[in-house]
Every structure is written in structure tokens, then in C-alpha cells.
Image (cartoon, rainbow, N blue to C red; front, side):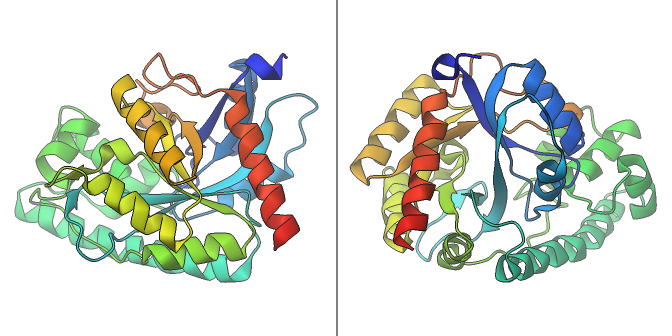
Length: 296
């Protein structure tokens, strides 16, 4: 493979969180797609990363550890959408990071029964045991609830389930604990990684210019990068994020947010069809990690 012209995908979900493919399947599919480098970035867990690191492939993409951590907005920001911080290149066996992720997972587990209670009040009678059996996993998230709703005729699609019931502001939405962003960045750093703001284009603020203010505030907390290249980002958005990253001396990263069958229109390495994250992005990310190690 000519890595200089290769593509990468640094935002992929496995069945350790809300994706449909096992880590081994992700590695195999990435190789078939001709990707030069990938990262599994499951929600608040590194179980999939650990599995992938144990798999020895004679050929295939370079692999870097990843995670997607749900964080709260700093005080003073009012936006729709959830703020997520991506960590890359960290030690997945770091104990303080593991304790943080366990706290996040417990919060998610406590949230699910409350969602089902709200759905029941709306006449949607579904049960966690059935959802878990269908998903074939213990770690259940809202996409699994949405998929079960679709299967049982309560929604036309996963997007429909979120739009009418499960998204923020809808009748079955339940908020949960999210870590402060400075704490998430600290834990990513102390485990040897770099911290990146995920899919900034999904954050919609009431006031113009708020995204740049958010990035500036996060950069002051130690944020290392911005996910400029993403499946739903328009060329205009990508260009704006590139400019913001340059202004605040941040790395650029990118990925599809691939979930497999959960969101089939998003394909690994291609997003909705025209996503291209160049290999040079991965080179710069690895260089930043080396610099952190040498100075740390």
C-alpha cells in the first residue's frame, strides 16, 4: 500500500459499545477497504481496543488506541447535541482512566431503566432483557433501544426513534452523568494520550461564534485536537474547523463514526460516501504522541 496516498478512519465503534461488528471484524473490514490506519473509539470503554490489540494480523492497517468520552459543557455554554472528547494513543490498561470509564458506564446503565419507564408511559412496552438478547451484549445504549423499537414497530427507523422519543428534548430522553471536560482531558493526558473534540459540526449553539469560544476554552484546558473531517461535516464546515484548529495550534483528526448495521448508510473509511481522511493526519497524530512521551 502507498501510505502517502492512503486513507484512515479514526472514529469507529465496535460491539463493545454501540457498534455491530466485533473488533476482529473491524480489523478485517478495514484491511479490505484498504485503510492505512484506524482507531476503535467506543463510548466510555476500551474493551474493544484491548481485544483489537491482542489480535495479530500479518497485514492490515496500523492501529491506535481510542475512546469517546461523554463530557459536560463548560459553564456558560448552551448548545444542542452532546459534547464528546476523543482520546488517542493512551495506555488502555491505565487504572485511573479505567475507573473514570467505569463511572461513566454505570451512569449509562442507571439511565436505561428510566428511559424504558418513560417509554412505557407513552404506551411503548419494551423490556431490557429482550433488548440485551437482541443486541447480544450486556452494554446497552440508546441505539440498541432504538433498534428494538424499530423491530417492534414503534418507530420507522433508528433516526425516527431518536427524533420522536430518545433525543434530548424528546419525551423519553433521560440525562446522565458526564465528566467535566478538564477532568477528561487530564485523564487522557496522564494515560499517555491526546484529547480531541469530536464532531464539532453536531454542536448547535444559540449564539454565533460560540463554537470557537468553546474550542478556545478547551484548548486552555489542554485540548490537543479537533475532529474536522467527519461524515456529516460539509466542505464549508470542514474548512472552518481547519481554520479554528490552525488558530489554536490544534491537531486535525477525522473519521466516519462507523457503527455497522446500527447506521448502515455510514461506511468505514468513506462515511456517507465522500469522506477522505489522509494518512498524513495519522502521521501528525503519532508525532504528537511521541513528543508528549519525550517531554512527559
